[in-house]
Image (cartoon, rainbow over all chains, first blue to last red; front, top):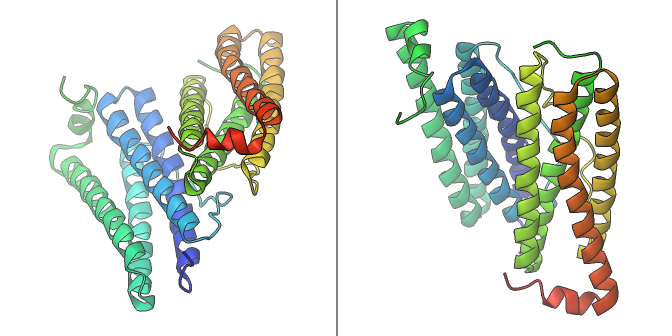
Length: 159
Length: 156
C-alpha cells in the first residue's frame, strides 16, 4: 500500500525518537543497576524494551506503506549522572515524543490515513503513561526526600 | 574498579558495532516479515535479541570498570533488495565483528585484563555461531536454489 503525503517522513522521525529512547533508557537502567537500585533498574530497562517494540511496529508499518525505514539516524542520547537527573532528561525526551506524536496524529487525520493514526494513538498512550510515571517519581522525591526514595529502590519489585 | 589502558575504548567500539547490529537485524526481521518469510523474521529477531544481550553485558562491564558507555555512535546499517543480499551483508558484518572482538581480546590479554578477555571470548563464540548460520543459509541457497529455500521460510 502506498503511503499518503508526508506520512513516511513523520514515521521515520518517530522511529528516530524511539531508537534514541531505547539507548537512553537502557543506559539509565544499567546505571541504576550499577548503583544498586534494582527496582529502578528493572522499571527503566522495561521502558527501553517497550520502546523497542514500538520501534519494531513503526518499521513494519513503514515497510507496509512501501517506505524505507531510516535505521541510520540517532538523536542525542541524554545521559543523567544521578537518578533525579535521569528522570529530568527522560521526561524531556518523552515530552518531545508526545509533541511529535500529536503532530503525526493530526497529520494522519488531515490526509485521511486512519490506520496509521490508530497505531500512533496507541503509542501515544504509552508515552502518556510514562510521563505520568516519571512525574510521580519526581513528586515522590519531593515529598519523601531523595535518600528515602532511593533506599526504596534498592529492593526488587515484589521482594 | 579502574580499567586498564585502552580497554574502555575497545569495549565502546564493540558497543557501537553491537548497537548497529541490533538496528540491522530489527530492520531485516521486519523486511522478511513484509516479504512473508515468517521463519526468517523469527531468526532475525532472535539475532537482534542476542545482540541486545551483548550490549547489556558490555554496558554493565564498562560501568563496572568506571568508564562511560557510548550509546551515541552508530555504524553503517546495511540492507539489501532481497534475502540473499541481506545474508551476504550480515555475514560481512559478523566477520567484522569477530575481527574487532579478536583485536579486543588480544589487547585485554596484553594489558593483563583477563576478566574482560573472558567476557569477550564468550561473545566471540556467539559471533562465530552467527557467522556459521549465515554461511549455512548461503550454502543451502546454492544447493537447493533460492526459490526452494524461500519456499521453506514462509511457515514458522
